[in-house]
Length: 226
Image (cartoon, rainbow, N blue to C red):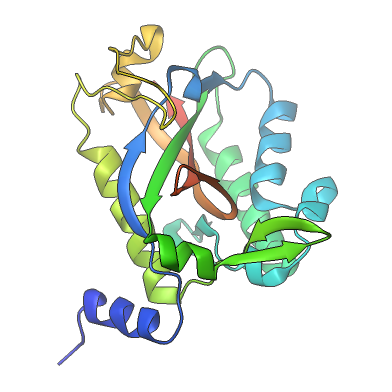
């Protein structure tokens, strides 16, 4: 009998994986941006995949191994990790092929959404992750493969289930207010009537930010609209 993902994640945490748990997903109003040219799309993909001129963002393959990337191979969509530059280059080539097949429209029909995923962690566990790098305070996190898969699935599920009237304050904001997404309102609601396809998606766990005892990571999605 196959073990549940929860038990596999728990075993990885017992072996030393950082015990993060998803708290919420926030979609800032400024989280939507049009991609107005192929050149801009290519630059964004290279940045997200840390390839070409952006490969210098990866100074430790252990960190890049935490990232989860969408891949399309032979028409089949999947999500997996890619620690080495060769793996990320392969995904980059696959997504370029996929984009050529879908033919993005850069007249307001290609949009990148940046969601902020907030994770909770006990104070003592966060303290264990504190390191000194290049004379400065930093944090080092380790995630098991099942844990990363679970965190990613939790982020997607939370984003999918967000209500239209959900407020999206940043952790440092005092109080909340109704968000006005303007022309992106239907995209925020993930309305299938306006979404033609998802060209690319990734959760970047190599660039975590710590604030008020919470851990934040960005979930990126590139949509092609109808």
